[in-house]
Amino acid sequence: MKYTLKLYISGKTARSEHAIRNLRHICADNLDAKYEIEIIDILEHPQLAEDERILATPTLIKSLPLPLRRLIGDLSETEKVLVGLDIKSVMTTS
Amino acid sequence: MNMNEHSPAGALEKLATGIPGFDLIAVGGLPIHRTTLVAGTAGSGKSVFAAQFLAEGIKQWNQTGVFVTFEEPPKDIRLNMASLGWDIPAWEAAGKWVFVDASPHYEDDMVITGGYDLGALLVRLQHAIGKVNAARVAIDSLGAIFSQFQETRIIRLEMLRIATVMKEMGVTAVMTTEREQEYGNIARFGVEEFVADNVVILRNGLDEQIRHRTIEILKFRGTYHHKGEYPFTVVPEEGMIVVPLSAIKLNQQSTDVRISSGNPMLDSMCGGGIFRDSIVLVSGATGTGKTLMVTEFISGGVAAGERCLLLAFEESSEQLYRNAKGWGVNYQQMEESGALKIIAAYPENATLEDHLATIKTQIERFKPDRLALDSISALERITSAKGFREFVIGIASFVKGHQLAALFTATTPDLIGGKSVTDAHISTLTDSIVLLRYVESAGQIRRAITVLKMRGSMHEKLIREYYIDGQGMHIGEAFGGHVNLLTGGSVAPTHASNSDCVNWQAKKTTTS
Image 1: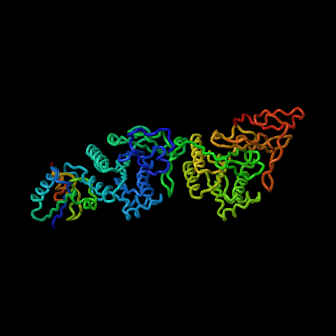
Image 2: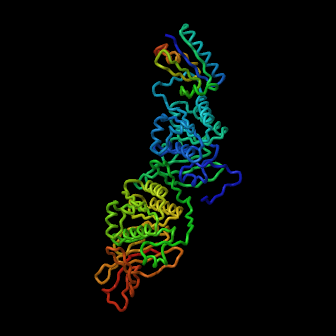
Image 3: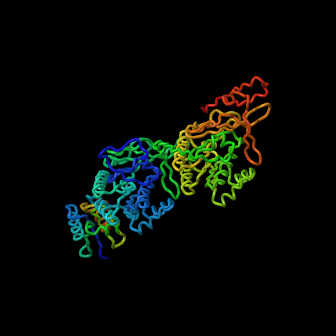
């Protein structure tokens, strides 16, 4: 099953760029080609932020495969991202 | 406007909230284009204040508003506020009210994967303000956003950013926040540090075992407000009502129009009737005829083509009908014709603030020319002496503002005489005082009436005897020949025997 990922950012800030780069790396390293990334700049599409009830940026939403997941932050903590996206189960080792 | 202070040149402008009473104590309203922090403990009415700020804006000035909710989902707010008479869904449909739903998603846990800010919230707020061209914003409540996101420092900075942006956009905002106790720190999370220019505190304390809600403006930077705590209440179908007691000047725009008390003899004792916009206090022990006097006051009003409102706190409507009928007055018919409205309530069913709010609402709806309240002492037992005095001031100022003729009754605890006109020393607030007293004379109990005070007019100083029969109250001759009737220790006139002495036996009649 394909991963459907939407990354919400507010403007082209350093933090936004950082989050986009981190997401691309994590996907490339862990999901082969089975994923689809959409980047949404809420400054251009505020209604989309409203519809998804986004508060913090960056926010990553995984809509497929279920369950739906929401990750907040610039995705720099790779382990947390992998667990949060259900790619990896919770690690017992450090 | 009723205020002692005048804004200095260059003082901040105000935006009237429309919350009844609040703008009086706020000397005009909230500082315009600023954020005001509204802090209170759980259940103190913060959310109502926030929602009402928007609702009154829409209702009274067609000013649109944005409601940011960090706590309850919009569907709960729509439902809760419907009981206060605010049709939020209709306003949303009309583009006058818009929600920014920032309530927590309980369905998924939040994973933090690195640095973040609340840029999306800010964008959504700006978007919402732009969408309806909002003049007002309510944010409820900060505590909830702090518990959604753990990083207090980030959230504080973001709230500061939001307050700054709102100021730039020219909106006037209310932000609610939690307090842990009624007195002490203004708010949790140190939020007062960034929006502390203007702080309002809501309290929900206990005053002699009775719940007592108050509102206090702690500070408005660069502009005036009234200091101290003011009672408020939340009324179904109305919302919050602040009782701006000492902020109100009891300005007596006295008219010199006289009306009949319903008893021609009493009118003549008063120097030709009572004044149109005056408050008459009738004080007497149980059974002296206070309720009869109310009945005559009402029937006199109805006979003169006036609308009368009777608030009864001691007897049920049925009982009142029966009493009145006994004196030849048909309340039922008067009610059916629309000239009379009787509201019988049990004092303990509500707090005094609620009663006051109900009375105000009824006066505004029914628009009576006369108001009778029987008895004010029944309300005294549900509150503290301070609370009662505030209530009487509140009702007196309201009655004056509406140019009503009002008759209040007060029951004195002692059968003969009485320590004072009323225990709470409210006599200074009324224009006229009529005393009904039992008098012991020659082994008989007789009744005596006198007009003790009649503001702005001459009145008869005699103490007259009266009796009550099926036709009502009959005021007769003066008790001639007796002295010191009111001060106690009656001295029999020299020509009379001791047993003839009319003993008012007022131990200490402090009715000066």
